[in-house]
Image 1 (tube, helix red, strand yellow):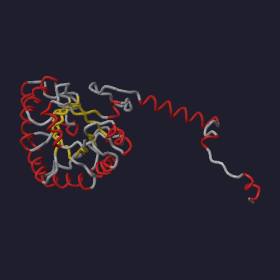
Image 2 (tube, one colour; image 1 turned 90 degrees about the vertical axis):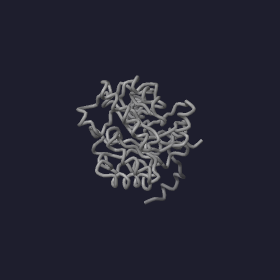
Image 3 (cartoon, helix red, strand yellow; image 1 turned 180 degrees about the vertical axis):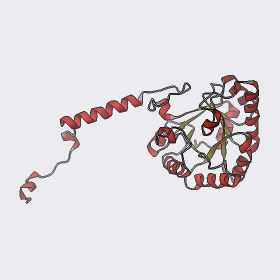
Image 4 (tube, one colour; image 1 turned 135 degrees about the vertical axis):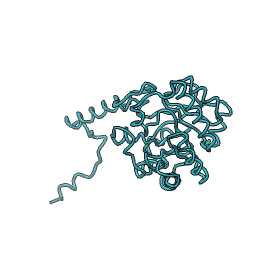
Length: 275
């Protein structure tokens, strides 16, 4: 069944857990779609895991559109959510709507995600008014890494916890259909989940959320630059890839690849007629 913002809302009502993974290309998106995952997030995390940046801040609208469109061509039933990159919406409500529209028109996104709470509620309202679904993002918001002073758990103290709860209610009221909670204490994430009517999607926020999201390179052991505490590795694909690359290099070097079964035949008497 096709996943939509409506099926997300229904899943919360039924108590059914939602699954989300990142993807940035056609072939990976196709595999995730075939596995039955509910949503794909074309995250600005592509800046780190695909483009090699130290953070997400350098990612452009053109980057997001390019990768989102590739993912869109690989899916049938998965809901496609695309991140709005740094400074594509913070500058004004007008810019937020225009850039969200570009992600839908050019990137073929079915929803957009933006980071922030109270300060982006007007942006959420305007984008939703333009008939574009919005997923909010609270807690550790990577685009604010410089303001946070690094990648740190958010909402541990009473004041910070109350602010996150208030912001979750605010983005729901503004029209968000879901909210990602990143690096939030499990107890607080459960409190937020029970306090709002839209699904919460956790990443480092415990099992009490309505769903979970992971960066696929993290969960497959493909990204060793930084290994988050919350990322379970379901396979060691990175190790398998390195072993395969090394085996290929060796076989080419010693002449065992390509073997006869990998080559094409011809009538070799023709060669005698060539000059």
